[in-house]
Length: 322
Ligand code: MEV
Image (cartoon, rainbow, N blue to C red; front, top):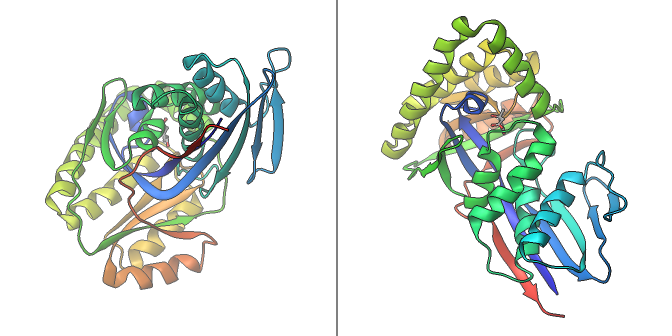
């Protein structure tokens, strides 16, 4: 049996980090996807290869390398295999259009696609279960994630997410605007950035509590503005959100440079997106100022993307019974 599933990466428009502490955040699925091709094989080994990372690793009950970068994918595959009570081994090939360690949710997209492809070998996929399995893999990658990445990758579209409570869909009413992403080229670990913020919050709780309250109100206001198509407000609130993220220590000189380049070139708003410490910025632009912003960002960043929102979350692309 063989199946192929794909799942999208994401952009966090506002609320990253604050979401880990229970505040709402807004995420959108983008049209860059990770793909898992899964085939059943004899025996009980799960062999995984990543085309982008150029590595292959075999996991069996007697030999599990928990330090392998593919270990989280193994966990997603194994939990999914148990869910469908499959006793055979698996051969899994991962490909991804998403930049790794940059803030676009590539690890979650890989885990979501893997879990879905394995489940599809025997059952119709249940999105709740796929997301739950991917969350277990995300815990290995990031330590204590909020769950926003696996949720948006599973369900697609645009969502307002609250940890432990789930999500509300946002009906976007955006015309004549685009989201543009630019990569600092500095890789970082989400788990380390989340731990750094946790330490700062523990030390300066009473100082930072109002920042967290502010982030909560801001995310709700952005959700309303997205539904009303109020792009000026969205842009301004993105700028304010960037300031709040700087306050909790996750911005860097490179991120500030890209943010100010985008704003000076005519973006309605620009901020870091994801865990910070490197990775990407996201800017909201009028279509007419897009070429200007794109040119400005390209002077400093090797990877500049126009992010098209993807309504589609995880999908099964192909299924055969060999
Ligand atoms: C994840 O893409 C961004 C963070 O908010 C961490 C999380 O939500 O788990 C920094």
